[in-house]
Image 1 (cartoon, rainbow, N blue to C red):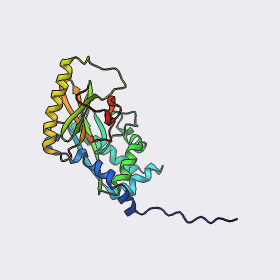
Image 2: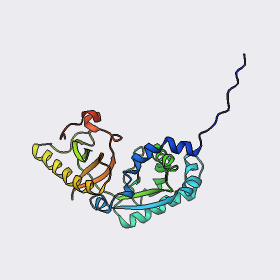
Image 3: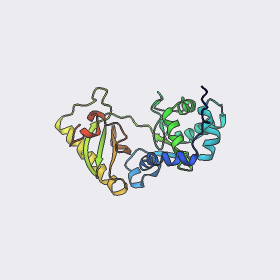
Image 4: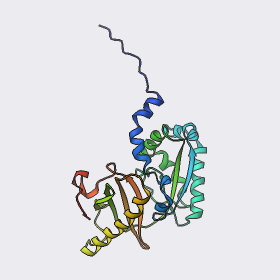
Length: 245
């Protein structure tokens, strides 16, 4: 008996766009480059560099497949140099959607900036975000954030514009502070302060935001879509009830 397999047909760009619209809408709401200036005023200083999507498709995406394109790498390093001129003590790199956490480099300086393209093109997270965004926007945005040394970090879960819970962010490591009632109350107060600003200038009613403690005081790090970010010590979003540190 002979079987004839039908020809394999790849989905069209329009079909992929339709299939990924819901995921894009969730990601789009929390893009760092799209936050209101009042929210940017309470977060880490950041420089943004928009790269046209046509350039990304023609010169950047092929590098993920192993094709060498020095121009794409040079463009990234040049953006990094401009950022380091503004933040000479170092920068943290990310897309305006997510960071390449699958890279082992956190802080970029003049000494290791040439390693940025390797981290970028070796990151599955970056590749996934570009593949998603290529169907929904006309650019990607590189973000270089002033390097900040964090002590304890916290994740705040907001549902219907109310805080539902707070967890340590780096919950797999030992706590850097003793969470006395005074410390817990202070974290709750900081979260409520940031909540007021975010609620006034951020359309979604459900979201997650992170707080980092620095030598200069607390800072709001970023906002993420509710339900897509790690629930940290809660284990599941279904377990988030009230204030827990």
